[in-house]
Image (cartoon, rainbow, N blue to C red; front, side):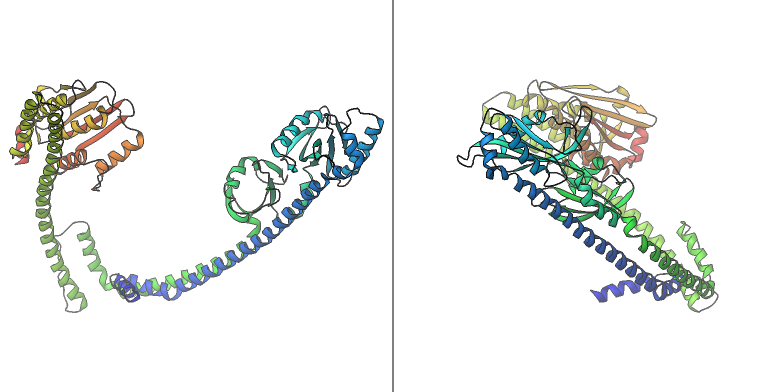
Length: 601
């Protein structure tokens, strides 16, 4: 394999002009090695910088996630404390709220609310729905009864395990609110293990700022924490883009418990490192601008590029000067070759000497003679190929139709003895005589339309009252010569792909008109039509030389025969609307009958 590759490379170099060969040699010996080494150095440096930044950011993100997990774990442990406080256990089951109950529960809640300074409020709901709470000193008023219904729903659906909620807003004054996340748990009776209350911790989401701020300062990036519902729990205020607008795109790339990816956000490149907590399920994402990561790399790369370009430019200049001096005698031969390239095969060289240039001139003259012979041979071969293709396409269409018609006769004969079978057999004979017995390549439009009418009578017997045919072709078209079996495949395609699937009676209309020297025939049906994607694929199949049979052989063969006979400016064009119908437009040469026949001959 290596030997073959080297051989192909040598042939490529040998076929180049002398001037290009010299330039290529200089490029390979000087420019390409330097460029390649520079590229490897830059890529290695880039990968190293990105990998180091990713590893560092991943470690910091993991530490942040662990810190948050530890904080939430503490809150969950605090929710168990009412189980071990006898006074709280006693008062939660007392319906009457007196001074002793208020004092005892208030002291307990005050203790809990001061365990962590980020706790906004701690709530305790007794067995009878009364709510007691202790709040942060910065808050003037709380409205716990607005949240009690939500707490009841949470514990009703999740049992006795602690429940961690995402970010939500609570009122702290008449006109002020605060974003918090909560830990909710059912309080059990230590003796009966029955539900006797609810304990809730509300924690200010700004606590995340203290945890994430050191990471953001080091990375010059911004951080986002997303809860299990896919909502933003916290977002750094220094973010250079709106996190809510980019959240969906970022979360789609979170596939593993931890990882990283690169993304384009508002025209800027970012490296995003994320960690999914196994405790809370929250996702911590740190978005680092690549401009910050690659700032030092960009400076070194610029210097490397400038140095590489200077060396390459010098090498190319030297190669150009030397190659021009060595290849000047060949310029006259190149000028004559360009004339041949433009199609002038009447040129010839008159070598004055018997050196290498003279030998090249003699070979050039032989080449021109050979090209002329080959062009004539190709022209004759192409004409024979067109005739063979048209005959093959003709034979491909006829058996296809005959098979379908014979199948119809078989179905009628098996069902019952019906006089219609005789008529069907007679019409089939007409179809076969027209398709097989006639040997002419061309017929008239009138003969083609009679063939369509006979075909439609066959359909009327097979599907009584299902189809209607209307032919509105002016008499001026009836004597126009056309290839045989052009209309029937189009009609058959319209019947079985459009009208047969339509509920009720389907109508097929054939019309004709002139556009300058082109005759246009429209075969329109009011069937089920097709969607835009199927229509585009069908028209592409008609234009393509691919022999696949996704859309059958009928329309494609008709189109190919028309193109081979009249030229590729003629053929079929399909237009369709789903639920409305399909129109197949046939374009052929509209010259007079005499002229047309002369062209065919």
